[in-house]
Length: 125
Image 1 (spheres, rainbow, N blue to C red):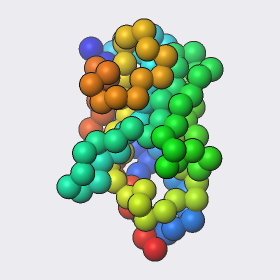
Image 2 (image 1 turned 180 degrees about the vertical axis):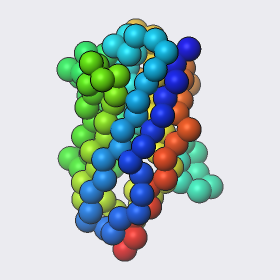
Image 3 (image 1 turned 120 degrees about the vertical axis):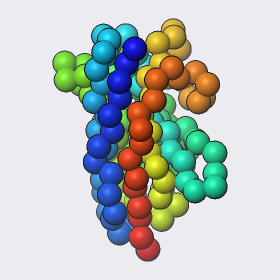
Image 4 (image 1 turned 30 degrees about the vertical axis):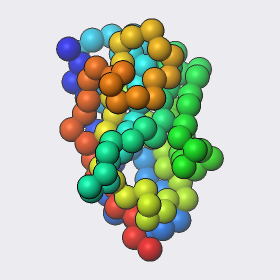
């Protein structure tokens, strides 16, 4: 079992930045690929980005590529999401997730085994 706790959400104006953190506990963090997803009201949960177990491979949704950066610190059992140049369309609840399979950078909801409770990000115009 892995417990994930997100933090760092909040409200920001368009063009601003936020940094989300996801702290993991329970199992060896470096055994899991990690991902970030987001869900806006009335919409399905969508992939944002993922990072491999070692942190050497990353993958981004086209809508965030060049603006968001995922990273991880396996010594601190934490994955981060640096979000720059935020837009109102980025408004959503952001979830981190952990995948124990062999996939390097999984991008589908069903591939992930553990989820955090989510943190709200609101971007105003």
